[in-house]
Length: 237
Ligand SMILES: Nc1ncnc2c1ncn2[C@@H]1O[C@H](COP(=O)(O)OP(=O)(O)OP(=O)(O)O)[C@@H](O)[C@H]1O
Ligand SMILES: [Mg+2]
Image 1 (tube, rainbow, N blue to C red):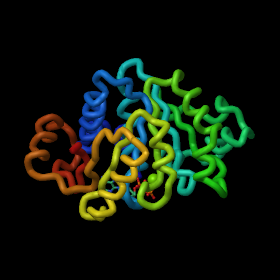
Image 2 (tube, rainbow, N blue to C red):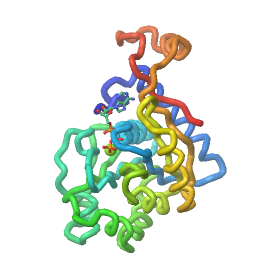
Image 3 (cartoon, helix red, strand yellow):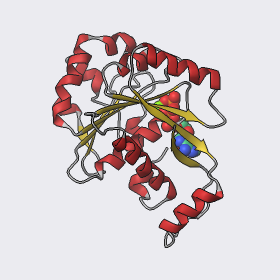
Image 4 (cartoon, rainbow, N blue to C red):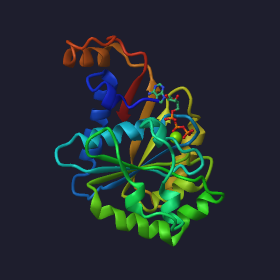
């Protein structure tokens, strides 16, 4: 897992994240899209990697303050993306053991804060469904321009469907050649059944073609990076 946007801002992958950011910004016209969740039908499709990079990409916009919350209480990952420990997180806040100010931390990416999971709870769904979680989401909103939320797969546990009800928009990530089409359709239906505002689908882990290679080559001709991407990431339905 890598924070490409931070480590290699000129790479084709970082450019793809910026394109995705633009697409999300465009879907924001006439709407106040502030809290955005990511999920997928299955495991390991690349949600945590994508949302961390998307959050970093938004943080690079002028005067925008961004928070990334790890709400995958079963399999916390955001702390790994930023190379920090998983102590003091949202579960400590929700159980009243720690103040939120003590748990939110700055990252090496300017204007990007993270709230990790903290202690893994025995009852993730109940915790996410609690009144405390709902009011926490409302209380944190005024402090940031954008809040991104990493979630477990919607096809496996109910957590993402619960979280989708608290946010302004949901991204459904689909890993090319990995995701099962039927499972992805079911994932979409599950989100729709809780009235989630699905912003679009992001196709991940697909082989980029010559055309997109040319595009990035044109833009970043001076980059010392290997030119032809092995893997690509971008695209909205
Ligand atoms: N675009 C990509 N191309 C190639 N590999 C990728 C891409 N995005 C993510 N990966 C890799 O896929 C693996 C899973 O990534 P990640 O943890 O982000 O997935 P996830 O959907 O959050 O998983 P989980 O369902 O367990 O939460 C990691 O090894 C990551 O480096
Ligand atoms: Mg994950």
